Amino acid sequence: MPVVVCSLLAGFCGLLNLQELDLQENMFNGNIPECFNTLSSLKMFDISSNLFTGTLSPSLMANLTSLQYVDFSYNKFEGPFSFSSFSNHTKLKLKVLVLSNCNINRAKGNVFPSFLVKQHKLQVLDMSHNSMKGQLPNWVIKHNPMLEVLILRNNLFYGTIMLFRTNHNIRLFDLSGNLLTGVIPKFIQRFLPGISHLDLSSNSLDGVIPSSIGDMSELNVLDLSNNKLCGEVPSGLIANNSRLLYTVKLSNNKLHGEVLSGNFSLDGIWNLHLDNNNFTGNIGNLAITGSLGLLDISNNFFTGLIPSWISNVSIISELVLRNNSLEGPFPCGTTSFTFLDISENLLSGPIPSCLNTRRLEHLHLGSNSFTGPIPDSFRNLTKVLTLDLSNNYLSGEIPSFFGKLSNLIILLLRENNLMGSIPKQLCQLTNVSLLDLSNNSLSGSIPSCLHNITGPSYQAFVQESTALSHAPSFYS
Image (cartoon, rainbow, N blue to C red; front, top):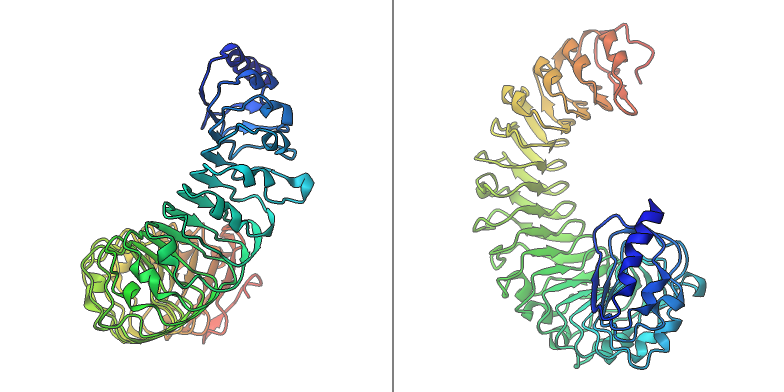
């Protein structure tokens, strides 16, 4: 196969006037033919998303002085990529350079390629996923006033972010997954007025979120998660002044304040992640127009009743309210959840029968004060993978229809007031890996057939339940 592929690709080498060579998203493998260095008229060279191996020798690029568009990303190169040939190209005027997921500059300690100092026409630069080290190359931003896309995510760059007034064209700015420190530039909107995608997540940035971010009228995606940011969310961002903003990720910071106040607008927002902060306030008055698809406010200090619209927004698929101080019953309505986690709150009353959508894959109701029996409507949860009803005040018997929920991997019923015997139908849960029925009022014998369940890393916890007898030795 490599010989055939190499012969096929070598056929391009005679096309001396070829200007564009696009081989992306195929299954070409083996080494890149050295004869490609004869294509001196080549302006576009895209071999991304293939299975090329071997090394990228300097001689391959030596004569390609007309290159403007280069994309070598997502291959299986084994050796370091040398930029020495690029450094000697005085005529080289790159506009697009994409080298994500390449084994580049490994021999030189994964440092950022210095030849880019001489490139001032770049519009797109993607060096992501390369474990590149050193100080953040702010000079790339300064020397390329036409830069529209800068992606340096998932490297090992350190230092602070510096912006320059020359970069008014940047639309996508992604420095996520590095070791950056310091604050987000105070007047970031002045330097990036047309930004649509801003991702500074997974660094060690501190300080407050600049109020100027709320003035970014073209912003679609904002991800500042997994940093050390503090203070309150700017009012302009809360009010969603841009109306184009559809993804906001502020997770895992030290933010506080009543972010979901009466001024908060969810107009147009599709994904909202506020989890793992110190937010407070009553969410009962929060309103929505109907576009929300994912809401995660878990691990905060929110209070109040869950708004009734939560269960009437047909488009919302993932709702995570875990570990707050929300109270009252869960509002019933027309739901379309695939993931619902309202565990570790102060919710009470019977489990709503409306939580029976066939789309549900994960249902977490644990550590609340729900009462009454497990709803018969749960027999419709045919796609459910994880079901957590633990640490409540549920009564009645374990439903035998659980045995027909064949996709179940985790079933947690511990610490309730369930009684009666363990239904043998649970033995039909062949995919289950964790079954916990402990700390209930169950009686009778534990079905020996539970020993035959072959789910991955299967564990069963059924003891510490009153009046159970004849527990087989395989139970914890």
